[in-house]
Image 1 (cartoon, helix red, strand yellow):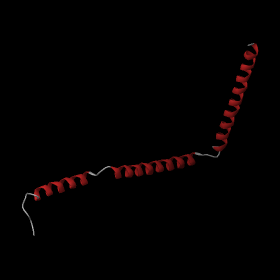
Image 2 (cartoon, helix red, strand yellow):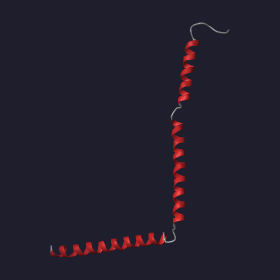
Image 3 (spheres, one colour):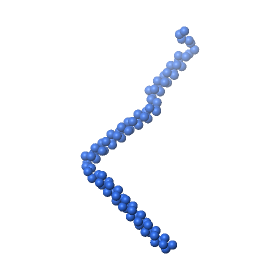
Image 4 (cartoon, one colour):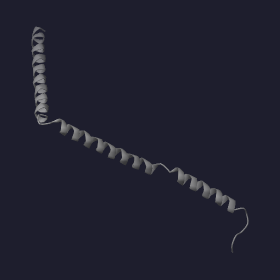
Length: 95
């Protein structure tokens, strides 16, 4: 039992040290990758992202519009149904 109480904190401390070193490495990587980044580049990236977002929204709206029937088409179908019912009053037309 005493050895368990001795080795467990050492293992946890080493694990915390490795996690800390890993986090420092990731932060250093981000700092190095953004070292040459200036405000003009950030503005360009922001504009590009906004353009991409708008394009995706437009595409999604078009795709969603393909699946929902249009109001004008529904009205046209209703008019055709009403005209068909009015014309079929029992009289033969033509022939």
